[in-house]
Length: 355
Image 1: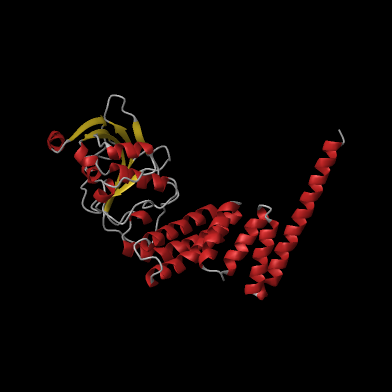
Image 2: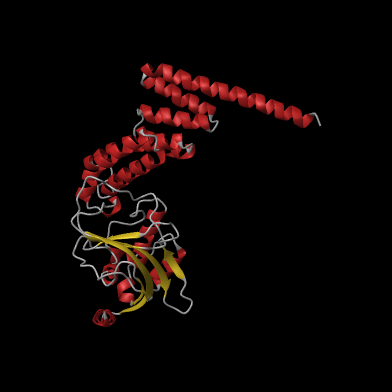
């Protein structure tokens, strides 16, 4: 261990052990998946694909990122969102120093690493991606089509004041890592955001089917997460195409049914405004999408937008008259709810004026 610490120090990394780990330091060959116990979890965006075999090891760990000054203010903490970081060794992660330091750790070990500026100059960009994941967003949201160094020299905000300040004035950082487990190649399932483009394309149909199965079984929240993952994979691929190009349109046509399935889950979960937003975005591009009109009509009805609901249901009938029985049922339910609400309002007003 002393020689490892000496080599780290020569490279501008100071390691301080907080808690010893178990067993020997794993053999981190490319493809080992490392899981740190970090305090900033990666929310809804990540989920697993069960049909693929991966050839890199993975580490899983929790991490805290701190300023290196006396105050030692915390920048990020993976435990805050409740999900550890998962790092696939040899995947060319944008922050190579994380691979360097976790490869010196044993399972169960907790250690602090003070890293020189040269190792952490890209941390603001990496942190933004991780924060996007924790918020259920595309980890690439806000990034331009250029390398990390080029992005560092842009003057646009990262959307977080602390990361903007760090980007403008880079400084050494401290990473506190708790190693949870190390998984050998072929023994773990990969997260969509960490896949290659080819892996994403192959995984989408599998995730889609998993979402359908979960929905049929009544696991609506889990199904929504699967649809979201599949959409995120396709959106990531779409970002690399010219908007309006044949490949871009093909990907968009794959996204649309997944987004409609996601909206169905949100209808069941009574998250109506999200349904309105997504269905409207679909209809802005595909004016003849019957399912989008129908789901948006149901969402409008649920939030008392009676005229908008009636207009959407009328459009459904125009595009597909065979749906008349279903639309009639929805309109009757809407009218019944409106009558009930009117009666409740009248009763409430009578009570007010009777005093």
